[in-house]
Amino acid sequence: MNKSKWIRSAIAAALIISAGFSACKKSDAEVDADNPGNEQPTSSERANQTKDSIFYYAKEVYLWNEALPDYKTFNPRSFNEKTDLLSYEAELFQITRYGENPDTGRPYEENKGNPGSPKYSYISDLNDRNPVASIVKKGTVDTDGNGFDLGFYSFSAFGTDNNYRLYVKAVYPGSPAAKAGLTRGAEITSIEGKRIGSDFKSEVDMINSLIYDTPPSAILKGVKKDGTAFDLTLEQASYTSSPVYKSKVFEVNGKKVGYIHLGRFSKMTNSDDSNPTDANLDPVFA
Image (tube, rainbow, N blue to C red):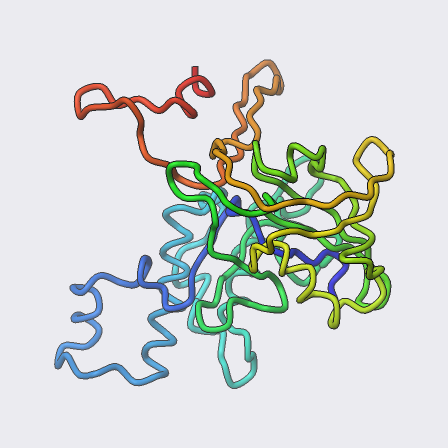
């Protein structure tokens, strides 16, 4: 296991791309220009188009896109499956090397815990969900904020397969977990009476069950963020949760920078086309 293994990644990356790339493929006109006979592309042609799309998409939306070179200089198609089985990931990694922090002379996305991968950006493979890197669940809280589970949003595990520590990364506000005082940073040491932390491969299903399976209850032991030990039984319950997990305004070099952790998109409330409002977001932006 990598030094930092995410179990259920939050959608807060600098660049997130889904394999299949339906949202960032070339336009039909561009594809037709490359393929005037409109023949069915071969697998290698599809791969090259995908590599191009990753680059062009990054040029449009990547946080540090102004640092990227032109297409010819970067040469997306140079990432070859014959020599690199993870050519898409390798291309993305190279893209993340260009945004350099002038204070450190290192990329903004330098990942000290795992130097071979970017800190924020990743490609989510819709075929296997990137099981080694992350496990993504279907949300149990709907767009109106109604949930019916234990309330865990995600966990993070740090260490190795045989010696790791499991922490709560986030819980849904108003959920049973939140009401029990489990917050970001709480450590889970035991699930259903079984000590965890020594065999990740055999224990990961038990961990994920707290998110995926929405069990009616769970017996948990651990240490809260404030250092106090807990031994409790969480019971599944209905609750209403805001999509805003955290918001704060920072003062940086004399400027105000707003931060918001938005867990999901929700429906607008009390709104009409001429005056749309949102009871959760409007106060934050105000």
